Amino acid sequence: MTWDVIVIGGGPAGLMASVAAAEQGVRVLLLDKGDKLGRKLAISGGGRCNVTNNKEIGEIIRHIPGNGRFLHSPFATFNNRDIIRFFEDLGVKLKEEDHGRMFPVSDSAQSVVEALLRRIRELGVKIRVHTPVSELLFAPDRVTGLRLQSGETLRTSNLVVAVGGKSVPHTGSTGDGYPWAKAAGHHITELFPTEVPLTSDEPFIRERTWQGLSLRGVRLSVFNPKGKKLTEHTGDLLFTHFGLSGPIVLRCSQFVVKTLQQFAVDHVRLELDWFPGEQGEKLRTRIREEWKNHPKKSVKTILKPHLPDRTIPLLLHRSGLDPEVTWNHVSKTGWEKLFQLLKAFPLQVNGTLPMEKAFVTGGGVHLKEIHPKTMESKLKQGLYFAGEILDIHGYTGGYNITAAFSTGFTAGKHAALQSLERVR
Image (cartoon, rainbow, N blue to C red):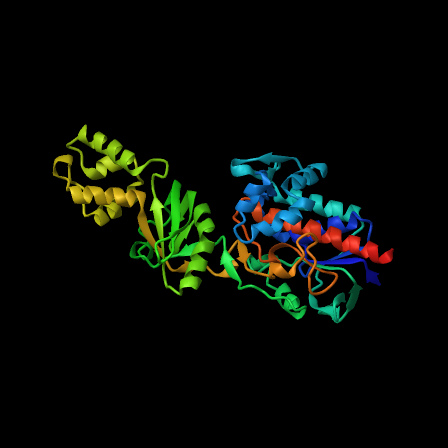
């Protein structure tokens, strides 16, 4: 049997591609090598599934620093507002949380997965799980089908590859699609982990001085070896036994990776601002006046209302201040150094956790070889790519899944339309 459209991959992009293709009335086959569909979707958002983000399109793209501008065309077909309508039409009520993140009211990712699968079955999509693909089949300039690892050959003129990247491999994203893309003549940009915790060999990290310490509302900045600030993010941060984690660390990670590669250095300098909402002079004046009003109190006592207890000894040590020093005996040099550290505490990081610990894969199929309006390969007619296999990566917060749903829908729809065009 020849299928009008075959979709490989049962993640967000593949599921949405199957829906979009089947809605055009064509015969669609969905293949997945695992035992069930939607595994990555089911664990996303901490098991609640952050289905998209409600920001304006320009803001969505700004939060996808890895080639987000490419998404202008797919978003013209299916954007974040379309995603919201899509799920609500399926009976999945959504709610907006901080920073525009959209979650199901049920707080259950499974409700999102089940709604998608229900729609796929309503549309008559044929599903085959436990069906790993061995290779894609081509005539000189077009797709002709694929061969399964079992040896079975499946025929189609329209094939959507949506098998993910290499992050979160226990969900099935093990990089299967990259060799297939290369076999079709595509280039794969260098792969790297992103949205991933950072590692550090700072002595206080190795000694676990601040392990488990969580900071809220701080700012983290990344600098290249020339002193240029590459990015900064404000939010929550966690010190771990290996380095740094938390939302703002994940957002900084891709800039750390690229700096390590670009400059061939062993370490990258970060700076931590403990009080991002307050200018340095204002902060200095506020604490100075408080201390002057209680001149017999020690500096460590004055700092306690403002900083976590565990941070004070190291900050004072680096400032050269005795924890017991009082206002009348504090040195001007130590006092100034302390406030430098409160606004720009230096942190050296030396890398990230490995790819399998990352939330997102950086790099992928080169976008110059993809038609942005259709997601079709420029090298092989009828070959489409969608989701994380592409060289597109964004921050956590609903941005990557938005890209996956958008490119998946666009690929599935145009694969089906091309199939119908051939029939005519």
